[in-house]
Image (cartoon, rainbow, N blue to C red):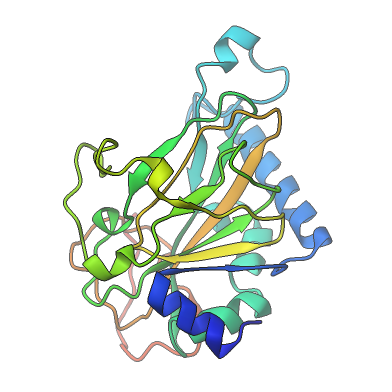
Length: 254
């Protein structure tokens, strides 16, 4: 799926956009799976904001809903399990991380039309720090994205600075790191943006009448040990490529 030049670009810049990783049929399946998760969550007491879409809420209440997200989507629909271990994904990951690749977690992010929130610049590292910094995100685009509907922006090469002190809930000061200083990464549905968890990134608001849906998979080298016992989930550690050189009895957190 990618050339040595593309892999070198990732190592140098901390990100890489790969076109056409998933075909139209696969993307349509993931969209349906995402809709199903939102619909099921809306019928429970576990998520009070799930029903941002459709006829669930009056327009004045919809405006209060800024970002819809769920973690560990591969526990809710098998199509996400197939996507995170897709042969195209495995081919790319093995060149960016190495022969052994392990899933850390997954999540979905939805920016509804016209009121999808901006996400300030940040690194992912403060949420789940690791010793060797092999952790990376793979943002799978389920819709065409551009600056108008809040595409991701990255600061090329920022991963080389290492972990940076964040404020609040792991955000960078927006005056020092405005979203405008990033390089926008517009993409088509089926494209995947890979970026290191030290790469500074964020996204603007969705000012369009189009939805922006992304599925995020976080991967690491299995020999990259967590620096803190945080962000542990009951299925963490699924092998996507190669083998796990560290043999141990894996036990869930729940």
